Image (cartoon, rainbow, N blue to C red; front, top):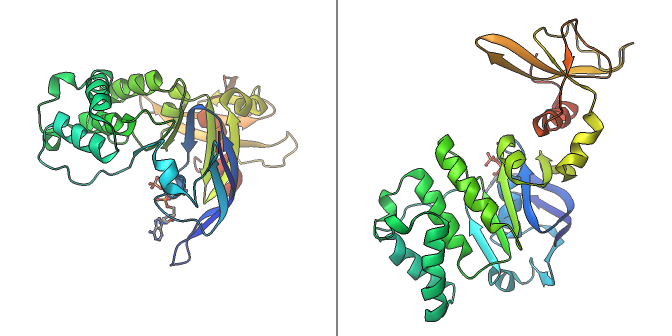
Length: 295
Ligand SMILES: Nc1ncnc2c1ncn2[C@@H]1O[C@H](COP(=O)(O)OP(=O)(O)OP(=O)(O)O)[C@@H](O)[C@H]1O
């Protein structure tokens, strides 16, 4: 269990990136979902002990993370948003090098490196230079290095960013296979990835955690109130006679608009009730904070 209590972070220019974050993350695959600038990377880097918090406490099992980041590092795997420039080394040589830096013994290295290459589907490319890998292969390499030493806490900052659909699917398969006895914290602004992979999710916005829980629990309050419609609402009716109604999202099908509307009663003539998705809850929470964005 990872526990954060009253964690705050304000950057030197006055940006308050974390506002009194108090949250528990259970074992398994956990999604941290939020728009650009929500504070996800700041939170991930702080949990990983890579930057300080102004105050508060973070514990992972019995480790006091903020006061003892070296202790956490022994059981941490971290996949940053940007890896920077890769040296011109083969995939296997670079993994070997990183394993040595992580303190793995020769026996552990001999056992783990081939296993990780298989798991991440890189065995056939082991002798190729990582610098020449495609974006998806680099992300899979990032996961392989994060898993060296069998860490119990794995932090992945936007692992699927910039990947094509096939590579995203490949990466998702790898992630599902490794999440058995570990806490994998995955930050993203792609709702679908969280819905596909995670049972537990925290929604972050403007430095705050808006809601946190198992996905079915988060969807329950909106059940029976999400409608699909090809027509928009005439006006937003936050407290109108017919109860509150607002547009959650607007998309297009073959060029025609398609609305998802939150409403306690049928909001338009052609509206039909539909299954609530995590995206609906996400937009519902954002609308409460900033107003509907989809008129
Ligand atoms: N080193 C820094 N100095 C000043 N402000 C920063 C710094 N790093 C991040 N910020 C600001 O803190 C806020 C949160 O940024 P952060 O990168 O943590 O968000 P994010 O949710 O990861 O965003 P994205 O999805 O775009 O990566 C933003 O307003 C950002 O501009």
